[in-house]
Length: 290
Image 1 (cartoon, rainbow, N blue to C red):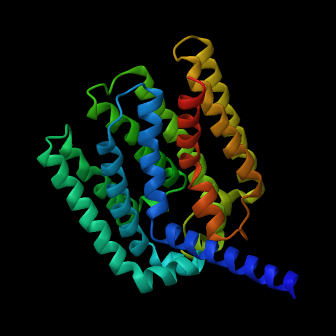
Image 2: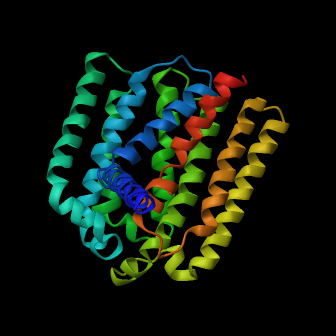
């Protein structure tokens, strides 16, 4: 009886944890944390002064933009991610309102504090409109590059905030984040093969198959890792940046398991959580090693 009760209690705990993670993923709280984590990585690696304001701004903007995207992609999500579609149908308006308040609050906050480049805060909303309504997401590979470029703007925005947008470290991190998010976006499409085919959207996975997609993504991951080593070896960046190789290992570890039957927690938590992992590793090295 004791063993049976312990097993039941463990199952309830696991079920509760999974439910909590689904809320974090479906509500866009987690992806917003991931985007804001890029701010942390940029500040630490570029040796910028700690400042919570860029973190809060990126979190708020991402929250709004991704919630808008959930509504524009609702029809596709009903085929690709039915649990997320059901969540948005039930709670979407609430989270959209929260996202809108966060976004408008971030703009007002930036204006009140005279944050540099506040006008550029409209760009994420324009990007969301271009991606979802103009049809960029229907263009083969372009949508992945577009998402990568959008995330690559985060380090540039941090550099602009601190008045150092052209520093090599900032530009490198912008290109690096853009490249790695592009790889993640391609992998993310593996779960959406059937739904994208039904909508007439060509992606790398539904054109070349999951196996080739994983192979090419892994090769791209190794290529980026080699570029990091080369740039450090040539003296353009300090050895601190070799911490990025831990990130490459994380990406390399999840790519082989990216299959169409993986659930939303795998893609929404493991894949989307890659930059939360990177920020944690960078902070750990900052406190313990550097």
